[in-house]
Length: 168
Image (cartoon, rainbow, N blue to C red; front, side):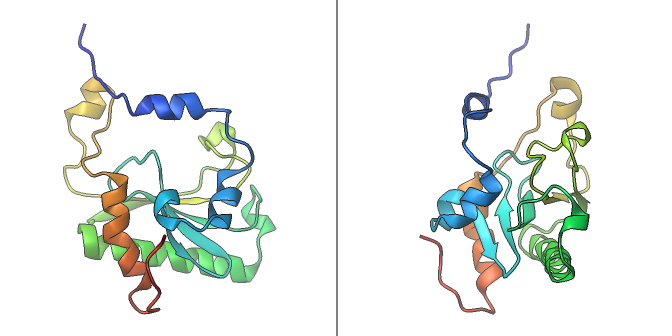
């Protein structure tokens, strides 16, 4: 039998059901953006790297308001949310040379949402040929960059014009 070692997955498995509260509510209340993988804080939404990415640079735009439905958020929040989705795509094109994107909202547990109570939009960068034999044959995705390295490369691009400092 072939074995694929992925010891970092145990951290995820052990956390399932153990975290108190909604991570999309608790993470932006904390100040350590690097530790929490927060890339940007807007007035109504924030941008965060996905802790369990599908591809390098997989990020999410999340409204601060805790709701599972798009229909529950205001026009100003929607405008900022979609503006940030576009901004994320441009930053990923610039820094990681992404050639395309999968952008989506998993609304509800049945639709695949791991955090079904808090709306969030996934932005997954894609490249020609980024699917290889590992997901097809091995049932595993290879992520070739540490999240801390991705954060270091992306964070300054969200703050270049604003002149804001780095996270703690």
